[in-house]
Amino acid sequence: MRLLLILSLIAGPGLAQTFCPHPINLVFSGDWYPYFYLDKQGQYSGRDLELLRKGLMRMDCELAILHLPERRISADLLSGRVDVAIAATLTEQRQKQFMFSIPYRLQTIVLVYRKSDRQTAALDTILDLVQQNKLVALNRGGWYGHEVAAVLDSKWARQLMHVETFASRLELLRRGRVDAFIDDKDTVLAEMQRNGLTDLALITRPLDIAEQHYMFSKINLDEAFVTEFNRQLSIIMGERPPKSARFSPLHPLQSVPAH
Image 1 (cartoon, helix red, strand yellow):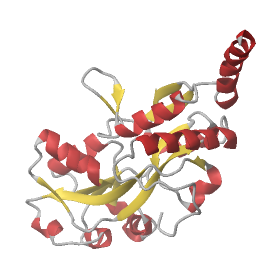
Image 2 (tube, one colour):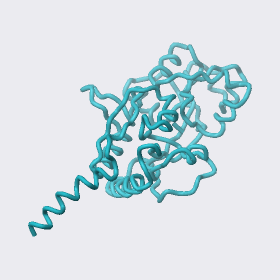
Image 3 (cartoon, helix red, strand yellow):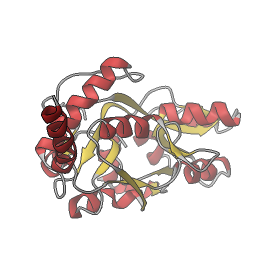
């Protein structure tokens, strides 16, 4: 019995060293409530963060949070400066470059506008907006579906203005500096509720609906790490399924792959 206890004590740290000999680096680029934000006590919190933390803790892995621009996340993942990104949509290009967790929730991408702007309210698609010379804010580092990607690859791309954080996009819209912004529906609704933003509205038709994954760098992590993380994540999600999550094994690339 004593021998078994000694062996288990020796094996435990070795397992952690196998999966993550160094802290797992995650980027914080500004509040993204309710998924990843600084709370009133100055502590990092949020649904996506806590799910990631719980999975890593079950692997005895340490999480480190770095303050870096979100637009550089792909480059930092490719260089190994960053190890993981939250809320990533699986695309063909990303699948070649990175490793992915199983999907852990759905994300709906919407257009947000001022209620007083009746002209924008009458429009239905992102192409309608830009063709009417509407200025739309978004974080160009994210993926927002094929409609937005098509506009970014067209002569209308200049109408899509890169704005790094949700708070900045919201401020520009409320001040009338942009006509609309693109973001996650749950984030927008949560901010409208907690701050009483009755002057804003969402265009009914979503731009995109996609499963969200944790996206991992291949530089400091390997397939064994991702396999074990997925195993732990599946256990956690079985205990308490996240809102709107569609759990399945790591699947082939879907035809319609947003942050």
